[in-house]
Image (tube, rainbow, N blue to C red; front, side, top):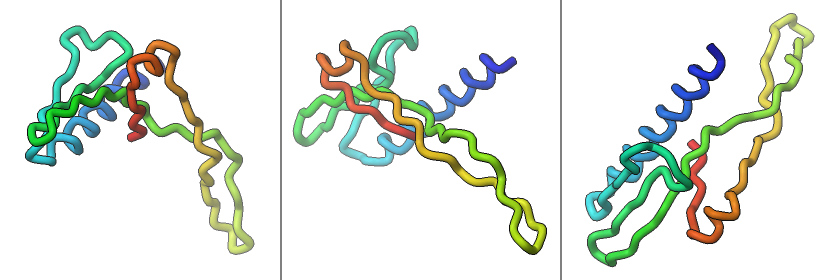
Amino acid sequence: MARRKKAIVGLTTELAAQLRLAKDPNILVFTPLGGLGPIDIVTLNMTTGEYNAYDVKAKNYRKVDSYTAPDGYKRNLKGSFISRGATKEQKKLKVKIIYE
């Protein structure tokens, strides 16, 4: 079940990134056919002719214990951001990372 949840989060973050990039009328957004590989999204800027490659990552935070305030209200705190870097292949292809 946990794998399916991660896959759903990955798909929704990719779709959110595609929607955000597609809001610019000068940019065409392309996705890979099989969904595999080092690149999730390729964009073409129609005015400049510039191509950009993106890999989309879901924002994740380390787990932190909750905090109980003096008034008794229990607050959940965000931990530090987990940064996932680019692979060697992505660095070679100059892929940009998008955190959604």
